[in-house]
Image: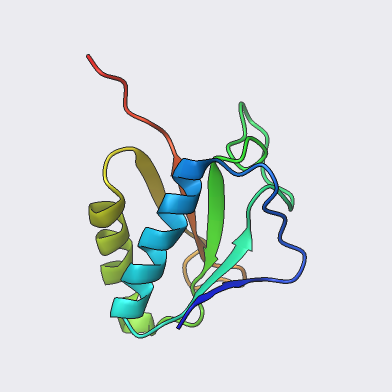
Amino acid sequence: MGIGLKDGVRIHGIRPEVVLGVLIVKEVLEHFGSDLVVTSCIDGNHPVSGPNTHYQGLAFDVRSHNVKEEDKQSVTSKLKECLGPDFFVLFENPGQPGEHWHIAYHPQRWS
């Protein structure tokens, strides 16, 4: 199993933290018997209601339709656990065309 990129995905300018996130997501998906396919990084159309992490090289989207339906909630939980508090994980559009995991690096500030 490996890491795949959907046709047209652009990765130029992604942050090293995002690369680490991709590797962690790969391990989680392999645990559930699925390959990792990155469907978006700095490309695509993303809502711009404030700073957009995709265009800053801080976010990526991951294909979910290759994961068993009964595993998707568990995958979401495991991603949050393994990526830790510096990453934001959202399972977007569940059950709809285009469902995917959106993962963004949002470092927590030291208090």
